[in-house]
Every structure is written in structure tokens, then in C-alpha cells.
Length: 153
Image 1 (spheres, rainbow, N blue to C red):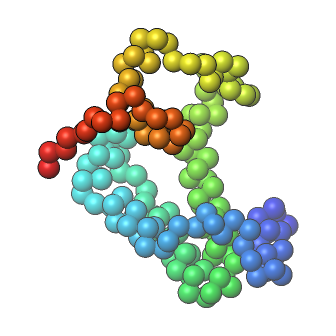
Image 2: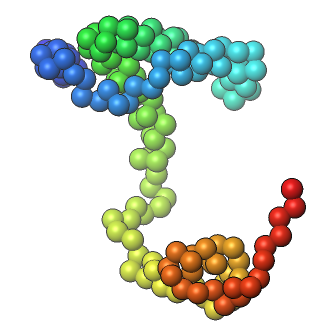
């Protein structure tokens, strides 16, 4: 028995899908399929990949999503298929990130991440809307309390 089959069987006992939060609203899968098969998308796919992309997975995900939602989340196999598809899509999207060997990944932020801004940048930030709001939030009184901001609509 495969890992996915075991997960599905254990979920059938619980009547709950572990990663059901990953399932998008069903109409989004249908919209993705429609977008993927549109003439504009086909032209873009041909330009980028040299051929049309297979869009059938979006339709399969839509059908499984509808089956999962319409059965009041009792069709665990359909829900698990959508979750598996979403995970594969996520892994494909992040493949370049994980394969990156150019940049060293941090384990923690730099020690001086909260140091004050350089003087020239602090001066440039002076009396900006963001600085005034930050001072209001911090409880500090802004220096130019009588200044006004003009908004043309």
C-alpha cells in the first residue's frame, strides 16, 4: 500500500482530509482551465515553450473539487487528489528556489537588522507621511503638527 493510499484510508476513518485547507474554491480551477485554453494563453504558451501546454490537470482538479465539495467532504479520494495536485504544482513552482546554489540561505536575520537608518536616508524620510504615521503609532508627537497634506481628487 502506498503512502497516499494509507493517508486516504486513515482519512476515511476520520472523515477529514488533513490538508483540505490547500483546496481552492472550485470555480478557481475552472477559471484556470478556461484561461489556460484561451487563444491568448495558447499564443503565449507557443511563444514561451514552443508548443501548447497540457491544461487537462486544471479540469481534473475542478471535477475532483466539485466531487469533494458536493459530497460534503465525504469523497476523501477526490479531495486527496486535489491536494496532491496542489502539492505537485507548489513543488514545481519552488523547484528553482530549492535548486538555487548561488545565494546562501540565512538561518536567522543579520545581527544588525534593526540598526538606525543612515543619516542621509533619515533626512530624506523626514516629514513624510509614513514618518508622521509611525510617530503617531509610537506615541511621539510630530514636530510639524500644524502642517497639512493636500489631496487633489
